[in-house]
Image (cartoon, rainbow, N blue to C red):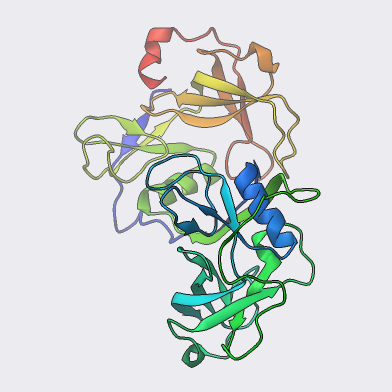
Length: 333
C-alpha cells in the first residue's frame, strides 16, 4: 500500500497534551588507577590525599594528569581534615540519596595544605550560619567503604577547638600504599524527569496506539521523517503534512547484543536494527525477532509484531519477501 498523507486541521486534530514520568537509571562501573585508588582507600582509612604538580600546587581531589601541562603526576601527599569554605550554596530541600536528609549547604572547601577545593555538604542550622571564609572540618562516616561518602559531611570548626588527633595542617608526602586497596567503584546514575512530547510526537504516539505509524513530510525537501520532529532537520522548516508509512520495512544495518540488560526480559544474543519503513526517509531502531540472530542481514524485509494492548511494536519479524536491493535503501544506511 502506498503511503498516504493529509494536512491536519488545527481545530479538530490538535493532539491531547501528553506527559509521562521517565526514569533513566544505570550503574556506572569503572576501574581505578593508582592515584584514584589511593585517594578512595585513604578515605576509608580517614586519610585525605592530594597530588602535587610539577609547579608545587597540591590538588584535592587528586588527578592523574597535570591540568596545566598534561604530564602524569603521582606525587601523593596527605592534607588536613579541616579547611576553609571558598564558596557555598544553600540547599533547602534535599533530594533522595544526597549526603544529608535535612537542609544543608553545598560547599567548596580548600583543605589545609591544598591549593584547590573539594565539593561536599556542610551540616549547618541555616544559611545565616554559613559564610565564605569560615573554618570547617570533616565528619567521617561511621562505616567507610572507600568512597567519597566516607566523608559524611563537613561541620563548622572553630579555631579554638582541638585539631583532630593525628591530622596534619600541612601537605606531607605519602606513599599511597594501603592494605586491601580499592581498585574499582560502581556509581549508580539516575535521572527522574517528566517528558512532554510536542505536537508532532503526540500525533505519532496517538497513531501507534491505533497500530499505525505516522510521520511528517517536509514541504521543502519532501522527505518523510519517522518519528516526526515537528521540523525538518535539514531545511529547518516546520512539518505538518502527516504521512502514514509502513507497516513493513527493510533492515538497513544492525548489531548483535551479547550483554543482558538489567530488568530486560530478553535472552541474549539478540539483534537490534535500523529499519527503514516503506515510505519513510529516516530509519528507526527496533529489535528483530522470529529469526536466528546470525541470519539477520542488511536488506531483510520485516514487519511489526504487536503484543496484547502494547502501544508500540514489541519487535519486527521477517515477512518472507525477497531481500530489498541495496540501492533501494543505501541512502538510509
